[in-house]
Each structure stands twice: as structure tokens, then as C-alpha cells.
Image 1 (cartoon, rainbow, N blue to C red):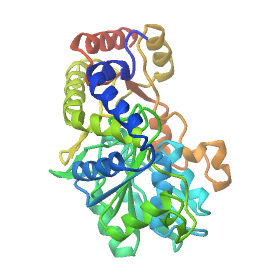
Image 2: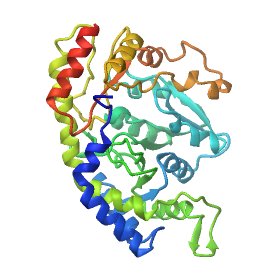
Image 3: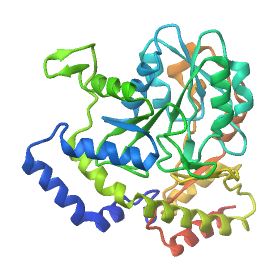
Image 4: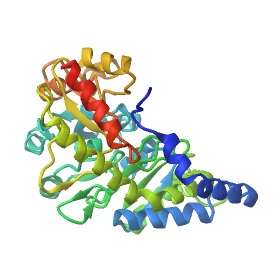
Length: 367
């Protein structure tokens, strides 16, 4: 594609010397699992999020799995979340023998509609799982107040929201007792492979998550409980430490591109631009517009050399894998309507104004 959805090559070229240097140091140290790179990254990422603790793990999916275990989710429990998200949000729920239940999304933010949560709670509900989709925070205070009143736990799925802020300086990943992150390569903070993290406030919880990620061991051959091989390796931690130092600047780059899109697309009929509440400061993991004739435009944009995406075309309640949950088409009308209209435009910190103008002019010509 002439204009990629995300230009990881440009990002690497800008920090190549820093990254290559730390890779060589880790390889020479032979400390590939655990060690100072991992512990340093955990401390630095916790500070970045405003969280008390962070535990590095092998992926965003394993982060959710461990957070659910730490929250006591097990067979017969229900976790309430949204259908408009990637399947990794729900997979760990099911793997623990629990059941995923969905609520619809807000028409303007595409995040969990907080007004619909309480009616969906049952006697089996254990956890509320808001997803900060596209890098925009969910309206968390009503969720936290509801959870406290109903005796429920809250976990943030912040896989796309590294550094997103809510009502001032409050940062995603520190808004609830537990938060989870993905460092998949295309994320705002991405590793050179899979990686993730769990953030939390309670030191005892952080210690348990750390042990669970490392086969449940308290010592090399002493295991307090059965765990998993969910460790963050030292190479990825070292790379993430380098990239974390640049993340605030990269976020400002994304905000610059989003502002350009906002300005240009206001003048294009047939395009609905993202809505940002006054209490949110998103990090623009994705810049998602809505277009009625989305599928035709998607194909034509890619034929014109512009890499666009759809995040996500099929809501979870309509996925073949979750037919057994018993949901039907029409159960979550906003999620279904949004899924048929959304289009993710290219956005990355290095994107130029000329590239933005080409995306906008191509989109205008198609409409």
C-alpha cells in the first residue's frame, strides 16, 4: 500500500540505533527470561499508567486471563462486556468456565453504554469489563459506582488505550483495581512480537499475578498453585522500554493526525467523524469514521493504494464461536449497525499532512 494503516517501518527507522543496542545487550547478557529488563519495564510502565504495580506477561490475552483469575472468575460466573470488540476480550472468560454476557455500545463513542449495564446484571455476574476501544476511554465513574453498589469487580481492557486519559490526569489502566494491556506490534506501544501487562493497585494481587504467569512458583521448584507460562521475555521488555520513552511524543503525533482528519473531514458529506466527550483525551489507536456504503468504499480505497481497515466487522454475539450463548441478530442493534458502517483510516505518528490530504481526497472522490 502507498499509505499503510500503520507504518511500523518508519517507527523502527527512527529508533533503530536505540533498539539494536538494547537487543545486543540482552543477547550478550544471556538473561532472556526475567531479569532487570523485565522488572525495569514493569516499574516504568506502572509509572506511565499511574498504577501502583504492573506485571509484564506474554500477550494481552494472557493479561486478561490472569486478571480474571485474580478477580476470582470461575465456572458458573458471568463477565459483562461488549460485543463490539476483538474476540480476545471474551476468550479468557470462556477458558475459565465462565460465561460472557454482552451489553450494547453507545452510538457516539462506540464504547460500553453505561445506561444499559445494570439491567444486564444477573445473580451470576462477577465482573464488569469495559473496553477502551480505539484508544478512547470508557466513562468509568458510573461503572465503578455501580460495581461498588452491586458488589462487583471491574477490570479495564485497555489493550488499545496506552496513556488515554479520563477526566483530567486519570489514566486508563489505573481507573479500576485491575487493568490489562496488549503490546501487539501494531498497538500504540508495541513489542516486536506478542507481549502484554496487567496493572493493579494491590501489591498482593500483583504478586499473585506475577507467580501465576511464571508457573505459579514462589521459588524455582516450589509452586504455590498451578500457573501458566505467560512470562514477558527480556528482549521484548528491553524493546518496550526504548519505545516507552518515545510514547508520549508518538501520542502527540497521533493527536496531530486526528486533528487534521477532523478538520478535513468536516467538509466531506457522507462521513461521520469520531465523537470525543469533553472528559476524554484519547490516544487514537485507530481513527474510525462511519460511512453508509462502507464495503464499496473499503474496496475502492485499498485499490487506490490506501490501507484501510474494519475494526470490527462481526460483533461477538454473531460470531460462529459464540452461537451457543443464544444471542440473535438484532439483540444489540447499535453494535450491529456500527459494525456495518465503520472504516479505520490510516493513522500513525509519522504520517504527513500530504498523506492525510490524499486519504481525504480519495475518500471524497468515492463519496
